[in-house]
Length: 473
Ligand SMILES: [Zn+2]
Image 1 (cartoon, rainbow, N blue to C red):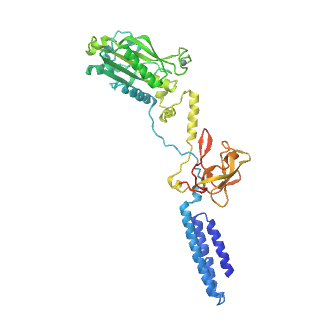
Image 2 (cartoon, rainbow, N blue to C red; image 1 turned 45 degrees about the vertical axis):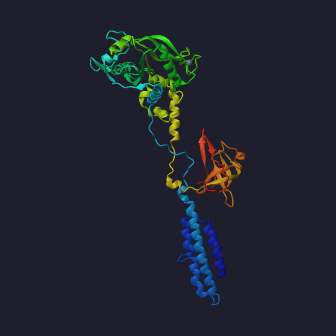
Image 3 (tube, rainbow, N blue to C red; image 1 turned 30 degrees about the horizontal axis):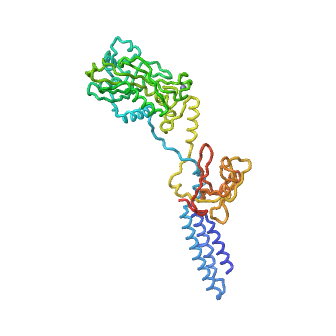
């Protein structure tokens, strides 16, 4: 009987030490201490032992009972503190990137408009708005384009009544501002405009303009050039050059077209700039004295300049978009690229589709909730040895010291990035409380944490001078 107590002692110590979770401990409790447990059995059997031996055996059995009970308590605390509940983690791959929350974003045209507004506001301009349904007077007449003027043909419009139409330009706002304010005026008017253009890659019936106006005493063509040159450099970069070529607009005299040096070939000549090295950006000029007369400014005292650009055109140049219709299709796959703040350089339909597929693929990920996450036991480990896994070019078999008696064997999909030699001695961050599983028939007990860059895994490592097996908190 004394031998039986001894045997029971070592049996219980071993079983408790190896227990993996609370449930197992409870089973051991029943097995050793329960009403039909091993200790109870010995105590019940005391009657069959000789009278001399009885007290000693009884004492030993009771001692063992207390000992097992305290071993169970200690182990229970230990399991609780490492939060091990391996069964619920067995199918979890926490190295997979988390799922991104879908967030809204700013439309590329709005983004460009904000940028333009910011640049002009920094130069002292105000941002003004006006109605999209305009009268014939503001849209044409006040801008020096009477009913029989040939420029009206170019701007075939959407009339609502004989006198009301959807504005074809935002210059209308300039007139409205000049009617209510006296110089000095420094303003821009961004907004939607409408023309009866046939829709193609560069034309749409709805588009956005930004027009500007500066009126004061002594404003010259030099001011015009200075302001627009600053704009182009702020928008497209300091090395962008500008040039002005003569043109005709009804409400400015003299008028010019603003060109900037080609972004794509830096002026050498390419397909985009039709080998000229220059790209047209918009129109500008000194305000025609006739326009000042309409709003009651004295053209002998005041002078000024005006300019207008298409916001779509600027966005297309800046982001390398080759079809204006993309802005209005509201295809979420197109818009998404801008909401993430990383517009692609060039959008060709085929390339775009491929990019979209890639984005969609990336979204097939798993969610790790906080409850699960808080149970993860993550430790620092040092790679003791590493070798390739036969017939698996992505896998390495690693032996990793995490402060246990023997190193952990872990199979990791990092062989595309690391050779076995490189891995030896490296300090890895390791998820240790996973149920063992077989990868290509090789047992793996844990998982090293890795990120992905350019489709290659990057194993997470640490410089902290902590011993192997330290918990990462
Ligand atoms: Zn070019």
